[in-house]
Image 1 (tube, rainbow, N blue to C red):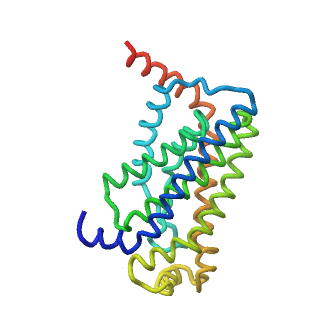
Image 2 (image 1 turned 135 degrees about the horizontal axis):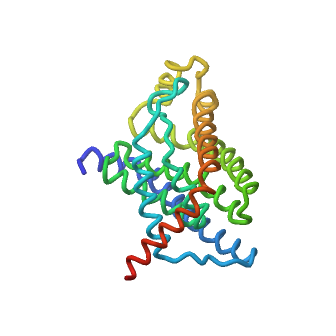
Image 3 (image 1 turned 120 degrees about the vertical axis):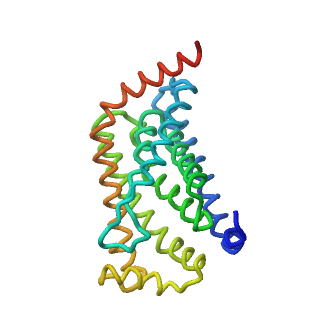
Length: 251
């Protein structure tokens, strides 16, 4: 870790601290809702710890690979790109509950930092976790109530709306100011980068409306479409595979 990075972390300690609190809140929410729903529906989580551990590890690795496949968008500046790295977390959350989905998101970020490092004093990576969880948590929580195709559709639609709202709000009130402070530039400079590729962007509200919101709406829609298309087919294969791995480990 170089001196510049240490300096950046020190200068933006407040931003990082808030995100660390948000991470803790995500885990607490996931655990609390999972316990509450299982009690209310009078069901139990019978999946073995070994199975969850295997799925979490494999899916986290897949998430990191997907995170490196980024697609630029014509209506947003270059530092906004589309990826589907949250997909394994959604599928893991559907299969084993919201705690598994959040854990996959968390390990993905840790692995990404280890492999590629950070150029944002961890603000960008922590933001990725929070925004990803804003889809994974509502989707997996709603689906846990009643694991049917109709509920899956409702959960994905709800999660798409939530990730759009959370992503937009987080950027408007926190992320954009954080990045401006991190790189020592005025907010107008960030707005100007948006204007350069999208003339409709003239200030922070239009930046969020015409760049951030569409990005998250597209991302949520794609995550929903792929999840609904593959989960029911993948679920029995996934559980059969993880059972086989667990048996081999116990042998």
